[in-house]
Structures are given as structure tokens and as C-alpha cells.
Length: 219
Image (cartoon, rainbow, N blue to C red; front, side, top):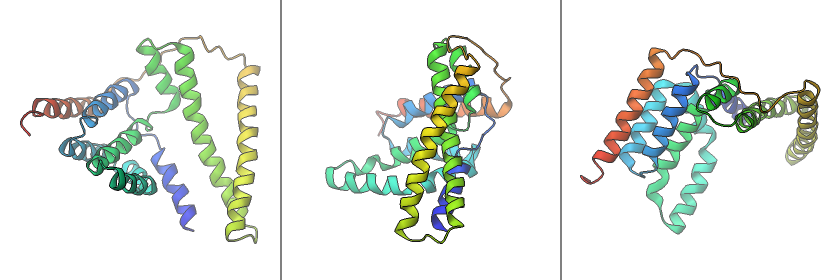
């Protein structure tokens, strides 16, 4: 039951946020620059900002990342750098913000900024594939729950079934792209008009960046 709830949280973390892709990409880049100052106050500001704009997605992403954060904290405790944990959490929150952009819109935004179409399309396909695999993993888990297999054997069966599904899914997607004669060099830009929410996110991201680097010598 706990594993099933974990998959549900991952699905929530991957939900669409409704952000305009170009503004979203710029905001994410600015927030990443602020996060890599490794300042606790900047990290907390980023976490708060993402919670304001996407509370459901961000909370789900943070909960699903608890095992990784615990492992990072353990390694940091042994090797040093324990103070970097808030920065790691902030980067997870930024990732939730970034993954709120739909893959197709993401590729349009990249091509708008003159990124090569082949590179933009490849990233969009990888993002879409990840979403599909999470859904397949959930369906596979749900199907195996109907059987009488339990304990460790359940996870072995799940891993075997999902591995086979992953390979078949990859072949199916490749064949679909080939049969439709998908042109990776085609540049297509269809971006939405930014809303007030998008501009607010951008302005607040810039303010966090300005605060981070204007006050770096004051601390």
C-alpha cells in the first residue's frame, strides 16, 4: 500500500503546472543560479516560492525525494557539506517546477531560444517517455496486486515485467516516429501568451537572484 501511494505521489509531481514554457525556463535558470550560491536563505526563498506557485506538485516531489535526501544527508555527514542539504531540496523543488511544463511546449520553448530542433525534440521525447514509463509502472503494479504474490517475490515479478514493458515501449515509440516520418530537424514554435502568474514568477525569481548576489558580501 505504501509503494502504491509512492507511485501516486510521483504522478502528482509530474502534473502540468500551466506555466508558459519560455517564462518557466528562464525562471528555472535564474532560480538554479541562485541555488548554486549554496546559501541557506536563498534556498529557503526558492522552496517557499515553488510552494506558493505549485504547492501540490512541490509537496509531492519533496515527499518522493525523501529517500534521496536522507542518503545525501548521510553521505554529507560522513564526507562533510551537511549545509548543502537545503540547496539540494531547493533544486528538487525547481525540478518540480520545470517538470510542470509539458514536453511539447518544452521543445517549442527551446526552439524559440534557437536551440537546435534535434536537441529540443530529443529532450521532449525523453520527458514524455519518462511520464509514460511511470504510468506503465503504476499499471503493472496494479495488475500484479490482483495476483496472490506477496513480499519480495512481488517486487521481483514487478521488476521483470516492467523491464520487458520498457523495452517494448521504446521499440513502439521508435517505430511510431519512423512510420510517421518524424523530422527531427523541423523547427516548430507554438508558444502560449504569458499570464500574470508567469510574469510574477519571473519577477520573484529575479528578486531572489538579486538578493542572493547583492548581499553575498554582507554575510
